[in-house]
Amino acid sequence: MSISRRKIALIGGGNIGGTMAHLCAMKKLGDVVLFDVIDGLPQGKALDLLQSAPVEGFDASIVGTTSYEDIVGADVCIITAGIARKPGMSRDDLLGTNAKIMSQVSENIKKYAPDAFVIVITNPLDAMVTLCQRVTGFPKNQVVGQSGILDSSRYRTFIAQELNRSVDSVSAMVLGGHGDDMVPVRSTCQVGGVPVERLIASERLDEIEQRVRMAGGEIVALLKTGSAFYAPASAAVRMAEAYLLDKKEVLPCAALLEGEYGVQGYYFCVPVLIGAGGVEQVIEIDLSAGEKAQFDESLSHVEEIVGAMDRVLGQA
Ligand code: APR
Figure 1 (cartoon, helix red, strand yellow):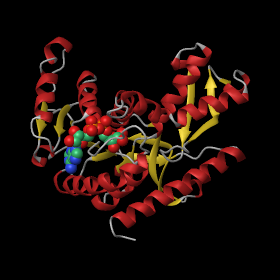
Figure 2 (cartoon, rainbow, N blue to C red; figure 1 turned 135 degrees about the horizontal axis):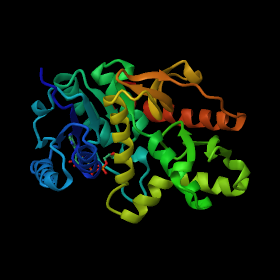
Figure 3 (cartoon, rainbow, N blue to C red; figure 1 turned 180 degrees about the vertical axis):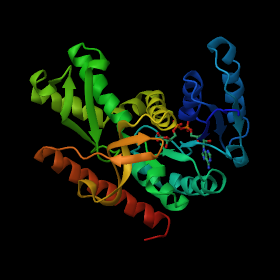
């Protein structure tokens, strides 16, 4: 009996796709297929990565391709295909272009990798993951959006900086939509088990949380030619790892809610359990009245963007 490596297909070989390929190889998660529509880009990145293997000590196969046939048998597909933000753009400005790309990519995943656990990163995330699930027709446990691990990581980073503590000592979750009205859930934020409100004044926390909401835009303004990619790549690979290793890890991710948190039929970021069954469970946590109000506000924005997507695609 032979045990083969797991297969991870990265759809989109740009900044996030390339960084994820590197992370998957370094973490020895499995063989990597890097797909893009620009001939030469994924092949060149794959070859470069492969040549780091003897130095880093990984044996995975890393293939760059423009052919969907190469994703056959993938255990995980992570989608970044699309365009990224430029300064002055919101995630929502990407809707028209990325909806068409997401439809096409999802059709191909349905055809070539029907058993894969699908993680969507392309923005506007809440609409794109909705579209992917609709087009593939995959069950809701099989299609998930990366948003909350990144947003929560940004929250934890800023709190750790503020207090000069290790990021390992800071726990926190950011939930809701992956837009400017995402919800940093202050009641989940603790530093070494101490509620953050006992350590940082409320007004200062307001400022830090606002920086979290705008953190993606802060990076876009600095880079000028693209958006964040190291942290988004880390976040998505963490989700893939939880699935491939059946970790049963509780992670904030965009999952299709059907009644949980009072949300019906929308992808929304909440804590979920990820293991070999994909999104195995939605975890319901208590929110303060203020947090609940922010949650509802964020949901109304997700409803709007999904409605706008339906109009763009002529489905409304
Ligand atoms: N199929 C596959 N890949 C595609 C397609 C398609 N139909 N259309 C575009 N691409 C590829 C591009 O050729 C490009 O290489 O998607 C890649 C996107 O890479 P970048 O432009 O570097 O963007 P990146 O930073 O990786 O972000 C990708 O994730 O976080 C979101 O907002 C971000 O929507 C953006 C996405």
